[in-house]
Image (cartoon, rainbow over all chains, first blue to last red; front, side, top):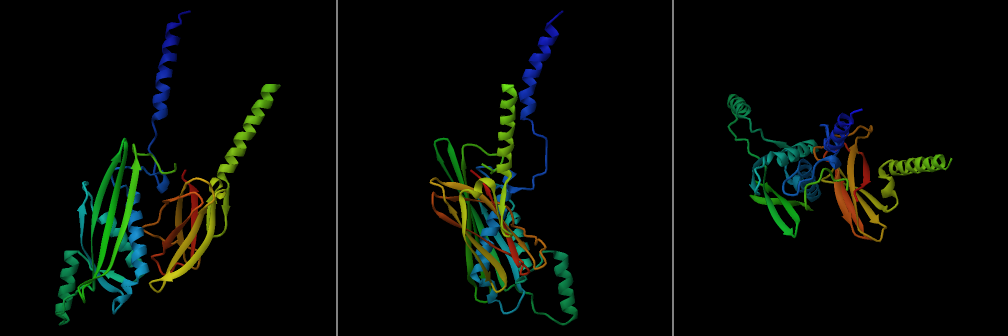
Length: 192
Length: 125
């Protein structure tokens, strides 16, 4: 009996087994602990972590309660990206917006041009020429600090937000959140 | 015969280890996985209101081990009828606690309907 085909099959199996073992079929990840942790970039779970930190500070400060009427009109003006990454700051501001709206303490001014046009027309018809001014304005900045020690890399992302009281033009509240990640390579999850 | 005994013992050990890792110690509000139950001691739970009507929870966790530990935690909030309230910022966070030290994990519900909470603590070492 010729043993060559059998030997070939055995060798092929031997080579293919580890390769197929490394392959992971795609799956939907809902648990934050299973999400990839990158050292040098802001991961999806980092945005909610940062938003949670600043929101807790904001609610604890009681600054939103200074508004004479509830819900107080509020606008997000600008969040500056001062990192090396190209990021959409809406990933932070939208979470903050949803949570603040849920609290019932503020109402966000729409940035939709058509909606503003319709509202202006209604005001005009009603003889109301007072501009719709926000009582609060939110602005901020996202910064990045990197460090290395041997093969270990570390990235810190700092999320700074200010709540401006437009009646007095003062920062009614300022908050900061930090997310720092360290390692030699990215990790598949944060379960340890 | 000896092989059968060895296999039985091995199988039982695997089963026991599996059971231990999946054990969840739980009160109504705080759930810990099996490994964490042995070294993370929840000392104080404070429930207060901030910004008039928002539920804030502070939980002090003690690391009873003689070395540093790391754990994941997640807060969820429920309304008075026990319905889970959606939060755009909910998810697992990670915390490091030095040997024998305390760490306070906190959460504030963004929804004023929040009446109760659940904290899940899992091992991250």
